[in-house]
Image 1: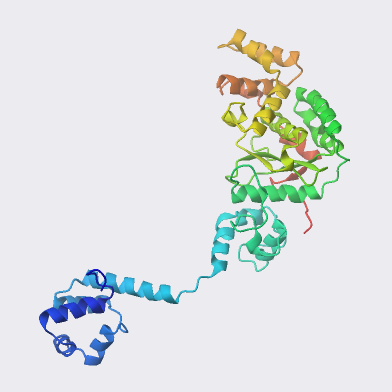
Image 2: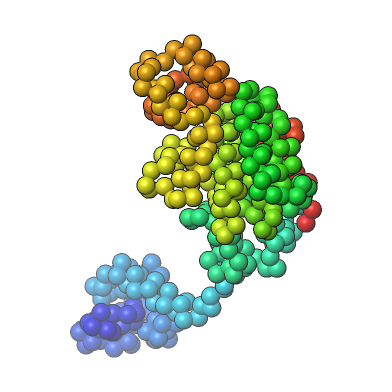
Length: 379
């Protein structure tokens, strides 16, 4: 007993026996049990069952519920003393509870694995993340190697990132140079006129030494794009095209290209999540690297000063003729203007018919993983 509280059922029973002036033999006679059984109860060797708790309640006036709670608490304490923590259990909880393993299997990312019960799963995960043991996988808090993504990346986002990295490592491109990327941006600008012209994007990036991959996002990852470097001369751009719209495609692509130009991804992976709405802005609450990339992307898509004048003159009424004329003046697709117009005015009902799809134009010439296709990556 500690501070007047009973720690075991036997202590509660013993207190009641003393109060009544009973011995264990007396209790045995009252309950019709052997002295050996009562001794076993008092020594903690016999557990208090539901039936026994009710009998003790009748014989001694004890509360059966309190007896059973004391018994459960006593058993837990005994188990805690005997318990030896299994470090691997915590690891398994992190890996299999947080990583989207089932989705990775379905997507064909874990080579040779058929389901989550496959005996080859652990080895496949280690190969995927490039580690020697399951404990080193980056989703674990004690993993030595970190990607150092900006902010707190989720396990699903990290898995997606590693898939982009796998593909990038096996992508052949021309020698990278900063001037080649600058020239690529100018060449890409001429493609804004139509969705079909986007088919040239993968070739232009490859010629500039930029590895480019389109990898379908994992559920709930909400990734739009990423920029990182395999080494000082090997920039990588990954995109999900989760919003299959011409305006979003060009904004995200130019955003990631600005990261390359500014060499932002050399020291930390630039993982861009939910790159729409406020996160596509240039406010003070936006990180400096993202603010720079957002500004470059917006200006690339539509001349911002001219768009501002257009809105001032035409708002709140924008006609089909107005938007087509503005787009033709600057040789860009009306859908790109519509996207920027929606963002600036918060009128997301405007000209939605111009927000055409673009994935089908880009995909045939790009490294695409998802939507039923799997890029063959060796392990």
